[in-house]
Image (tube, rainbow, N blue to C red):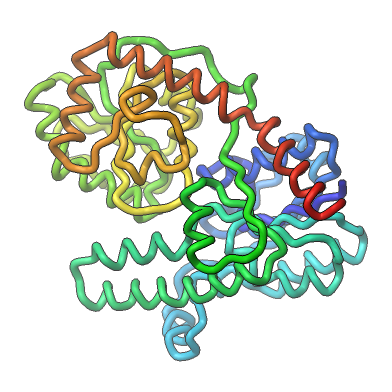
Length: 398
């Protein structure tokens, strides 16, 4: 098939889990023999860097980009309160990208259009004007849930009111969008149920994040001697989770294992953030995330809010590292608690699990081995994408 893939940020170079998920989709479709065209929005946070793309990728995807200014604009934010629009969504609409999109639709006929995330939904009407193929929204999260959770947990009244306003506007847009597309692709079973509860009547398919078998490094089975967190610090739920871990959990871990260390890796750490905490190393953005995950650590996912799937969890499991997570942090992975990972939502339970893994090498190795096997059985990317596209072809008789 001829497939148009619209992205709200460049899939490459990979900057975060969203980039990885979109790139996995692209790779899976190309591997299955489909002709893919990628159009992407670029932003200050996720810039367009064509010089970092290899020639084979550029040739296979014929990728093009338009740069948008999505930075916070107080006047636009205030205007959205008056008009009732979703400021989160409006930031991703620009005539420049719509023009790029229309030109591509005039040049080519596409059998299927995949909209990556709710933030590409403002371009749906323009695409429908030039394309008769099915319009499919691939939802990376249930977006409004993230903002509802952030609003509930804000201690500042004015901020809580504004965050709730953003969540309400985003929910209204999201509910309407669910009725406008021909199909939804959810990243987890939990998200699929949320969309159904919001009244989504179109077919909902599932596509979790997948890995190509050849990209997975050898198993890391060294005795766990430190704790690590990997995640972008420009995403509020990650900041919130690390702050909770440091405030409520870390001292208990150090009481029992005083020689251990917490390593924090990811993009966009605020200057001097977390550096004053005892035995904490802020690695910041790393050139090779696999090296962080393959080292002899216990991964923590202390998320208190969020939706969708934690891609770094799958990657850490793939190399055989044990994980301690909240329930939200491990959503969509499947598997079993105490077999493939450990779960705790309270500080005492979280600390207990981390301590056990640091002190019990055989337990950590067993959980890591089971986790790695689960990834090979359940998250092979080419099979996942092939099955999804096959289901779409069958449903829409393409």
